[in-house]
Image (tube, rainbow, N blue to C red; front, top):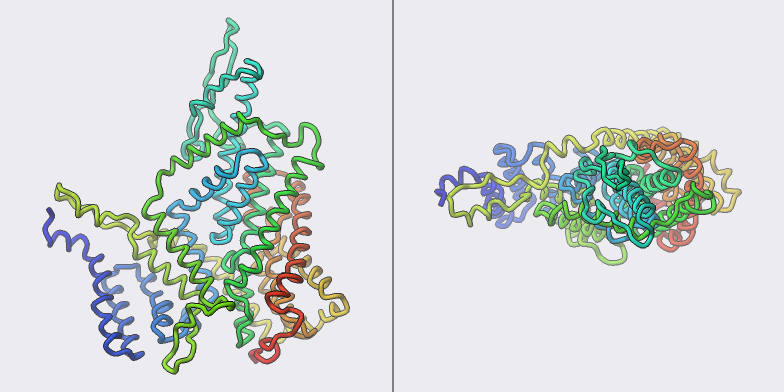
Length: 594
């Protein structure tokens, strides 16, 4: 049994992390004044900075959640000292995504969904799309696409190889009896995304007997010679991933930068609540997101399996043997991940808690948990979403990735395991958080603020009042289609930063609820399906699939139009019901900040 001194020497940071907040909590408990509460935060930060229990930058984020939850300062006032609250929320959302990627939880989710949805071409594509869509709601679409492209590439390699083996077995042994060595015993199951293994091909020797000859196993689709049908299936699956990644970013407010640009412009332009928050955003956009993904699934089938392709160029249904082979590949990859680790369970739990905190902070239809916090005068205290996400990030750094401390208690040899690292560490966060996008968001919001203060947005909005002669529905469609086409050649954050202030002024000039034009325009910033340079998912898929630009443009143009039609219908039905878009609201009439 190790001595007490040895335990303290190895785990002193853990003890200090647990005990110091408890010991010094007496200060705000005995004297529940703002001075005592602020003193408590100051002492905690001083201890953490001096002992470096956390990286200095992580400790520096404590006021973002501590001050609002203790009633010292509202979230907006705290984050304004660092940066705008929306940028802080963006950094927090991206960091949570990094934690999910770091523990490989996203791959577990992807393989689980694909395995259970089925392995026919239609079901396989549906599995790719639903997985990519869901992950892209929370993780950056670039990271989601990069991960899914590797999964799709590996599975398609196995599908194409199993197809060759099944076809050879059928031709050599007849349809009634097939000896599928390598499919049944799993001799070509990939390890680490198909980086090892050998392809067993049937060859005929000089005596006319069937023997197997080892050949180098292709690691990627790029190393394979594909016929027209296989090439069509490859293009269909990769385009499905790109479309789902782009559309999935519209499902949550943190899904893409343009969504937060809208939030920032509304908050900087109006004092009163606009009714658009995390919960109402999801309630409005998730139905449209699902509808767009379903339409994409149908359109890609028409393009690659139905009317638009004939004969050998169209994708045919697979045989049960081929599906069984692919199912075994997916199952083995999933089993290769092993049981869920403590780190994965912790990250998943904290992620679910964060989503619930975002949804129920101020859900409008019921009192939110933020309503429980009051200032010294009994007024509602403004706690925003950035405080929730920074609190969860702090927990990710604080909670251990494994339970080595408790394992030490049961050890009989007297040896101590080293302290467990946190579920997230600063090196990973520093390397994987796209800090350049933070500057892009800041520059976009600065541009929007400059356009508003200089009067340029008002002037441009007045010039666009000519659209008042059109029906409102036609105006929304034209604006949405214009934004969708422009975002093909510009980043979605830049497009939103330039056009949203103009559309806000245009709506006010024609006495229309600003959300009626701004919300569909924001969503359409993600509807860039035609060009490889339009979005990172398009570029990744274009390179991985080695497809022609003309094929991407042909498929993408129809997707652009379909999605614009969907958002036009959604804003004129569900949007009108949720936000009362047929009237100019009080917050738009009287609360414009001068």
